[in-house]
Length: 57
Image (cartoon, rainbow, N blue to C red; front, side, top):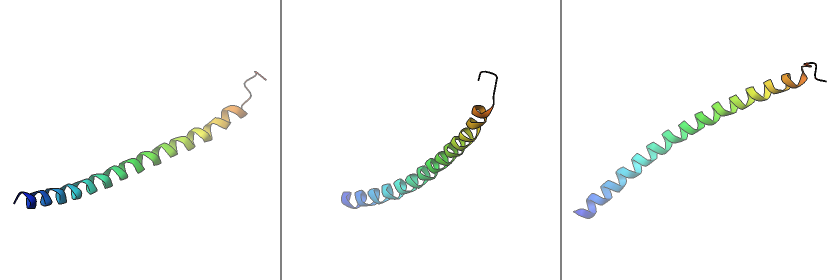
């Protein structure tokens, strides 16, 4: 009986862990996309500062 309960428990754990893994995967992909967009925006803004002559040259 204990062996059957253990099998049932591990099957449920695998299901739960798969669900959590999918959610964390989506979570991290979203974070990476947001960071990539932020990096692109910063990269696009940086040359503008370099091209402007502020009188120091």
